[in-house]
Amino acid sequence: MRILIVEDELHLAEALAQILRKQNYSVDAVYDGQSGLDNALSGIYDLLLLDIMLPEMDGITLLKKIRNEGITTPVILLTAKGEISDKVAGLDYGADDYIAKPFSTEELLARIRAALRRKGEILPDDALKFGDIELNTVNLKLSGKGKEIKLILKESELLELLMTRKHAVTSKEQIIEKLWGFDSEVEHNNVEVYISFLRKKLTFLQSSVRITTIRGVGYVLEVTA
Amino acid sequence: MRILIVEDELHLAEALAQILRKQNYSVDAVYDGQSGLDNALSGIYDLLLLDIMLPEMDGITLLKKIRNEGITTPVILLTAKGEISDKVAGLDYGADDYIAKPFSTEELLARIRAALRRKGEILPDDALKFGDIELNTVNLKLSGKGKEIKLILKESELLELLMTRKHAVTSKEQIIEKLWGFDSEVEHNNVEVYISFLRKKLTFLQSSVRITTIRGVGYVLEVTA
DNA sequence: TTTTTTCTTTAAGGTTGATTAAAGGTTTTG
DNA sequence: CAAAACCTTTAATCAACCTTAAAGAAAAAA
Image (cartoon, rainbow over all chains, first blue to last red; front, side, top):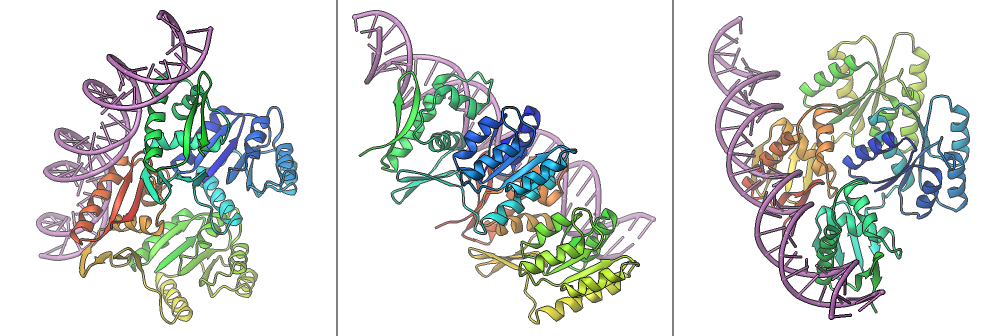
């Protein structure tokens, strides 16, 4: 289950992300409205947590835009105390719920569960697809052509990143930032090692998906003919 | 037999829970209407004890909502003295009974038995199944392949959690939250210990069910070939 | 109540397996 | 060709996890 947090208070955003990851949700966080919109439009999220007060573009505008694009992802608005009128506007524009800051973890989790339940009675599972492979980001199993193989966490996170970014080229810096965190001192070689591991497993699966290197730029998934 | 208590007076809720557990009911308690709704909708309970005055969402509204969802779980309302009109409304909306605070333990237990009897003549039993094992959450006996072994409470709760979550991976945090409560300071090692105990007992039963570790993620039940 | 038993938690050391670092090879680019 | 970027494998390190024993707490029995 993938959740996108759009919240400009970095601290809160990271705290939320951490809490949700412990519940085994896949979480991405962005810190301004424009990035929120870009990410939300990808349609890969099962739920959006949207702060109302945001730089670049406020949460309500963001909500309006994604609804106009036909995206029905459940949205929970995060509101400060005084923003009652915003709440109402939010619900009018298709938010599923709102929760006033400060809120308890428990309450947030309950509302998330409720929103997810409300939406798709049959909860979509966590399988990501690309070409002939399917990655389950919860139990870390990668399958294709009848075969199946277990990944370890870092492999899964890396492949997940490549799969969600589809045909975009992903740089080593982006990978490091996503897998090891913003200011980590991890070497490029480290990424190369995991790319190598993944290629081996893709080969084992006899998948037609491969990880192509674009020198000086990054990696991208491709389907071979 | 699983009972959900929705009662905002923490003290009363816990006291009730304790009394009912002594009667071998499986009891969960939540302290506001929204959480009550979330939990009740899961449909796993055999009875709901519902306070009328609640934060977030009052008991009557809660009752209405679950009945609208087609959930027929018996409901006993807990009412304060003055709330006669609420009682009536409650019965209109499909409560099975009400009991006025303060009430005696005996009276409550009698009404619970009556409500359960009234509902399903054949009472659903408390056996959970997965693969070749069966867990009775009331007498804490785990059986499979003809053999049977007694679990202790924490083992049973842990296995119950894994069994109800079926093929989902459950993190240690989720386990701690469920077994020890939200903000407890219990160490991860504690979970590991009980996982270890359970594995030993599964081995003793020669069950094909095993608890698989997914490093950095959590635990999941699997059936071996 | 005191004693005994059972259950729960803590602590410690061992084991496994993930991660990192390193080294040598290969491919691409200028 | 030389330099840079990348690939792959292996070995060392480190973190996560497992297991056992025993202390502590709670419940049951005497």
